[in-house]
Image (cartoon, rainbow, N blue to C red; front, top):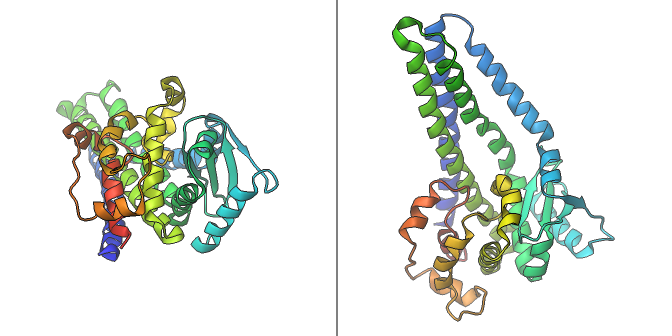
Length: 322
């Protein structure tokens, strides 16, 4: 069953990425038929430039916005030991290790390639999780590097931007020839932009499931990952809102959706049977055979979120435990 779910996750990623590329291709074909010349080359060039720029300066922007300081093995020996062990298990080069000087409890991975991978933890998460929970989160982030899904997100996130640019340039260019055909292209581009955004969010949510699974493979402790997720949601829900706003634009990098934590915490409490603030191995085991309740609002909001619903993630971890 677990293997089947893994294949399903890979299939979802492939289908969503393919659809995004087809959407962009369809828009370019429409433009080609309209202009009867090489105009689409402009958009292809723009796509390449945007991907390249994002690829080159992305890590620098993340470092600055997250206030990242890279630490040596002497400065953080335990952190280095855990990351080095996980990197060996994952079969990837040891990433650079950093601490983000922000209070929001979380972790994130980024970089251009597997060799350029960086894993960072916030100051807040070091105060919140125990060592095994932290290791499970680091395994989650190591899986992002192993799967190279950061590069995939860089590639596909450009597609809606291109569609939006086409929408703006056709709707407000002043070219109204061919019985308003430019309007049709603009409306089609706007539709493609909206669908593209939904697909990008879908891929983002799917890769989180995939990284959770990777954490279980590397660490073998799904209940620790589940407990860490529970604590991270609670930590985000109780963090100062001004601090959340400062890094909200980069929330896709985090382990959980820091913006929606306040809504998720109520649904998550049903999993903590003895209300001790953690999800134990026994509680996760019981969850596998029990039903969970998710608010209607949270189900709807999930479609517009960078992360899956947290109850669903923990439920999946209960299945991966066996």
